[in-house]
Image: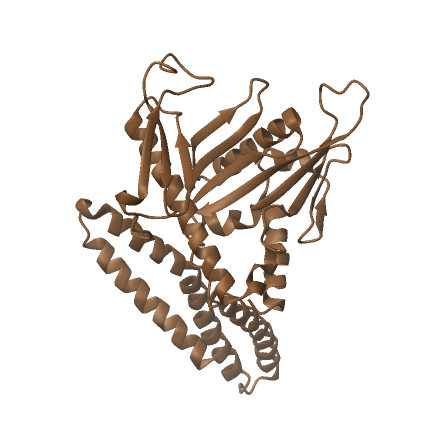
Length: 356
């Protein structure tokens, strides 16, 4: 208990120090303010639970003292109160110990979300569009900022590829389990015989990299500009606004052409490039530390199917977590929280079992 209270004291002291620093920051230090505010917000659950624990301990001490009262009735009431408070204390201790478990260092980051059509032709592109909209609606419901960075659409309303920036509180911690192959089983609108088709789409959730995370030498970049193509406004095919950036050491290529401004397309492409390079570096470090660390999502290979969306049975099944629910329509409308909680809980248990 003493060690637990010491850790709570450390969190309180750090929180007060952060509050003082935030109060002294001027508007010119917006980046520093955002960084410190995010750290302060991450301490809030522990500080609040610590406050509840201290209050419970004080009440428990009073109840135990009252057990020495000469009145037997007061003694019995005090014992009953002490039993209730002791149960509450144990629950709070368990909660605080969980809060003190080292977290994924990326949990507080924003993300770059990439959804791509897989096997299945037009039906796969339509499913990719469904998933992209699902994440957009989920982000809206949580008050996050969802900004499409690059869209490659099909004429039938499908999506070959959609890339978005998602920003808000603990975005990566909520979406990190979504990376992998998502499979859909349904009857396409063009299917006259009523046969069920199976198609896939891939989802990648990359922690968004800040400029300070990676130093990218301009000499390692080849930047090509060209005219936009595909569906678009009046500027399509009239100006060299599209940008393709190639990172020469790794061969990673990013293309953006949605904006009319070459400058904006380049900025978006660099944001995506940073996140992809950060993910590649982290994957390399993960492999060096332990192969089992990636057991939380099977092998970690995105070619591995993680989830099936069965429309005839209105069922969505996460194969890693062994979890199925029969409310597919509401999930596609963005009602993801309960399902994601179940998946995350199951995968955390698996990660602990392999000692990651």
